[in-house]
Length: 211
Image 1 (cartoon, rainbow, N blue to C red):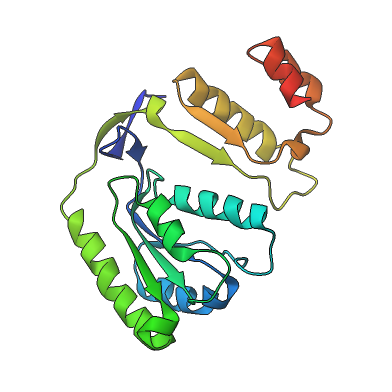
Image 2: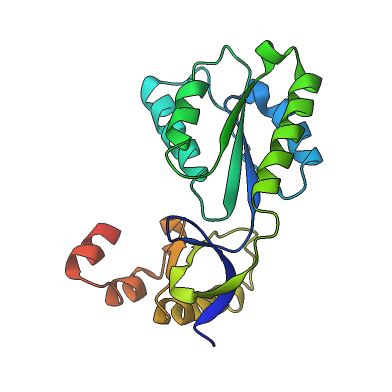
């Protein structure tokens, strides 16, 4: 395979393959408005976060950090956080953390805007403004080494071990050989294949961490 692909270069040096607008509800109660907004925004990615209340302080802090990092994903050109306004998770803090990069991040608070419909209407306008920022941006040749690829095991059946899993393994080897990174989200899916992964660990320390 070739060592390059057509992608979008980002100001921080990362490379994206899509220009998505991330829509993030800051609590379960804002999920409905966020879902309706995503349905009206072409090229959006809805994060189905249903927490935000009734959780420990540590869980809220972790969720805030993780959600904020999605705003810096190479495939994201802008982020809209949809807040109810009374959740435990501090939506303004989420926006603050998400705004460390060059992409615009906007906050919509349902209780301040006067309900779901007005929130969605305002969100559509903001999304259009974000889309305009990258209008005309052309794809260009980018090195495969700039990619980070995530793998997630799902829909397993009796053929997974014979077809899909080996195919993904071969694909991962090709990507890594070109300098890309490949991440498997669930190490529990490696049950029965631990010895294979341990033999391929970069260092004994990495092998120990895997175990």
